[in-house]
Each structure stands twice: as C-alpha cells, then as structure tokens.
Image (tube, rainbow, N blue to C red):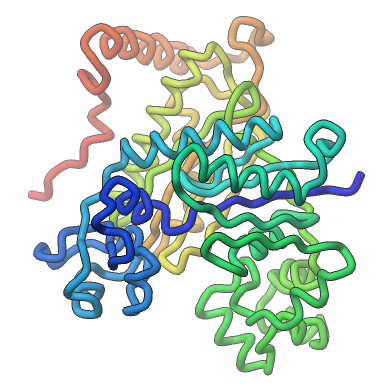
Amino acid sequence: MYRVVLHVDMDAFYASVEQLDRPDLRGKPVIVGADPSSGRGVVSAASYEAREFGVRSAMPIIQAFRACPHGNYMRPRFARYKEISDIVFDILREYSPSVEPLSIDEAFVDLTGTERLHGSPESVGRAIKARIFERTGLVASVGIAPNKFLAKLASDHDKPDGFVVIYDDKIREFLDPLPIGRLWGVGPATERTLLGMGIVRIGDLLKIDEGELRRRVGDFAVHFRKLAMGEDDRGFDDHGGRGGMSIERTYLHDEPDLDKKIITLRALADKLSVRIRKAGVVGKTITVKVRHADFTTITRAKTLPSPVKNSEEIYHAALKLAEPEMEGAIRLLGIRISNFVGDEGEQLDLFASPQNEKIERLERALDDINQKFGDGSISRAKTIRKKKE
C-alpha cells in the first residue's frame, strides 16, 4: 500500500505561546530560555522576530542577549506549553490512530489508508492546520510525503505556517537542490567531510562512487544513499497505549558530565518502571534515544529474551544501549519500553532470579509509599548524586 506520512511542527512553539498569552509581545522579539543575567543556559525557543537578529534555539543565552539586547526574555512555562500541546495531539488523533510524538510540539501522523474516511491527504493536512489555529490560536507547518524523512523536510521547507506536499514523481525535484546538511544524520563533522568530497547538495551524493563514500563515512554510506534517493523505511511508533511507553529528559543546556547522564538514565528507568506497574504490563523491547549537542538524534533498540519488570532491568538494558553514545555533550536522553504483554498473563519464568523478585517487591512497596504520601516522598539513593568530597 502507498504510504502517506504527515509531519506537523508548531512554529516557534514556546515563543508563540508567550505571544498568544501576551498580545503586547506580538510582532516583537521573544526569547524563551535561561535568564540572561545569570550568564548561563541556552535559548529554548526564539520567535521569528528574534531570529531576524540571529537568535536561534540552543544558542547560549548570553550570546543571544548580545545579538538582541532589546528582546523580551521569558522563562519557560512548561505546564502551559503542555496544555496547548495536549490540544494539538488530540486534534491529530482525530485523523489517525497512529500519531508518533517527536517532542511537545512536533509529531508524525500516519495517514496511510485513511482517505476513504477523512478525504485526501492534502485536505486532511489543511484541515489539521485550520483546526489547530481554531482551537489554539497558533499556526503549524505541515509536510506530507511518502515517508518520515521527506515529510519532515517538507514541513521545514516553507516555515512559518507552511504547507508542502511531496508527490512520488517530484521527489528528485525536491531533494536534489537541498544542501547536504539537510540529510538526516549529517552533523557538522560529517558535513565538512562531504563538502570536502565536493558533495554540496543532496543530489551530488548520488554521483559519488559508493565505495569512495564508504571509505570516507563508513557504514553511514548506505544510510545516506538511501535517504538521498528519498527512501526511508522507518515504521510508526505511537508512544502510547499498549504499544509502548516512553519518558525523556531534555537538558536546559548541553550536558557533558557522564555521571549526570548516568544518573538521569537511572531516574528515567525508575519513573518508567512505575508507569508500567501502574498499567499492569511488562515489555520485552527497550529503546534509548540520545540527542547530541548538534541535534543529531540516535535511537537504539533491543528485544530481550523475557520481559523486563523492574527499574534495575530497564536501567541496565538502557545503559548498555546508550553507552556508545554517551561521550561528549548531549541534549536529551530518553527510554522507551514496548512489545508489551500483560503482567498478570505473562508465562511463568522458571528461571526468575530471587534477587529480581526482591527488587520487584521493594519497588511495589515504594509505589505504595509514594502513592500515599505523594510522588517523590521516597526514592532510590542511586538517583541522588553524591556530593564530591
């Protein structure tokens, strides 16, 4: 069946919410992030007015202040952003049961096979844009294409308030002129390598001998060539329901400290284990997501021989997957558990570890205490970083 993927991205989301709630800020540069007077932290979001002065997301806040000292600097209001985000995702799920969130303001929607129910992909895309504006007062950019890679490129192509559809017979016309840095997975270092080979635009990559490309970028050569041909066979991961549960932590500034990253992974495993116990399920597949400082995002997954039940198992499986990507500064860490079976219906594991049984009893006891006295009333000592002596 012909695939149809829609990508929706809320334009300058945090900054747009601030302008929505404060009409006096409309048309003015708005920068959401750290306090410039602190001299630390980064920009979380910048309005399009602020971008005209060179302010960008993830830029050090002090650099943003130098570029735009007259800007309106706001601290993030995550509860408010989530409130708006929930409305947006509710709208998306009206058009498809397969909605894959990428962040609070961005998602893929699988429209494959929905045409008889909702109309053509183009009409659905325009309807989604109109509904979002009607319900929230905010604009979104939408891209529609045969796969995720192309759909995301399409939504980014004509921001803000963009709407781009890439048809099968127009893929080459769309892809070939784009800068090579737009290829998914090409970070600054790889971009320099490719530029040094004379690969300036995506179309140039297909003109290079695959053997030469492999010698320069290793196993990524196959990945890059497939994308340059407009191919992306990633499926959908709806991050919810019986299909899976996930949790992420985005750092306010890029985190270089390995100990802090490991502590974050431990805390995420603890929180995720609470969720699956509440849902009464266990899962066999663990996926980790690591977003580097250059915003390159790596996901790694492993399906285990038997379902994981407790935070120790989740943590150790996630750590093993994440370790190769933990060097250097990172922006985000996430863990997902999927491939669920019901806890009560799980086949008896004759080789279950007595230690694991003790851990599970302990964690259920912690759940009871936290439920009675409030989340965070009691937690593992391992999630609290020891002070350096």
